[in-house]
Length: 126
Image 1: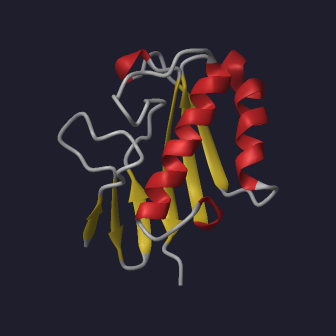
Image 2: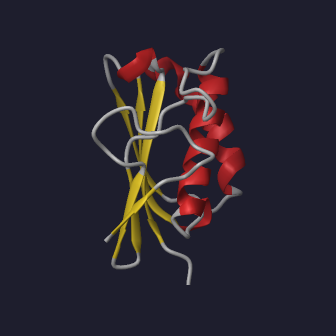
């Protein structure tokens, strides 16, 4: 088992790692819309936060030897399900029609007052 540390993604702000690789599979922790430079929440709304989460997820997966195109399943947590369509507009640009299985869950709150968080399971590149 290997613990992943991506330098171009926000550091874990608690007792967890960004991702773990075991048996050819990457399991990410929840990925937040935080600026990789200083760990602060990115300004803006759901569009900016979704874009940052996916950039951070992409960078974590690449550090683990994977990519967004190897994602098998993704879970999305939204604090406002009325933002579902806006989130989907940004989300769709990152997968180029090759979408993984997905669950979207409405939650009452997320750490650091984020509007969105994502967690993914992906294959490691061959």
